[in-house]
Length: 151
Image (cartoon, rainbow, N blue to C red; front, side, top):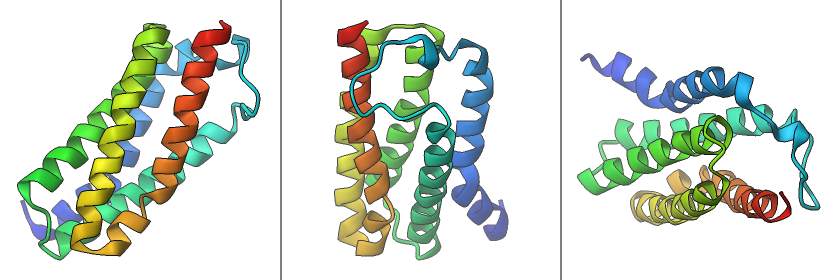
């Protein structure tokens, strides 16, 4: 695979995969009908936030690879957290397994934190680009657990 194509894939893969999952689950999203904990944002916030987060994640990974700094562990944690992230939506909305989604997102919290630690050891900007992601995932953890408890 040529370098330009590989760079484009690294940059946009999170957005592409997130869009595919969004398309798969769109008819199963029951967010509006759920009782939500305090601070729960309106439904429109989620696609905007995730688009920005996926773009920042892609930029971070693109830069890491562009500079030939991605080791096997970096790649494993990056792709692992991306897969866990994408599967959360399927578990929560498609299968409606709310308790499992609570445990799943806690796993995601640790993977995103691990990714940021690994990336920061290479270059701080790689981790800084993922700080909004980590904050959003922590907030999503609160929402997931809150929705599970109140429903």
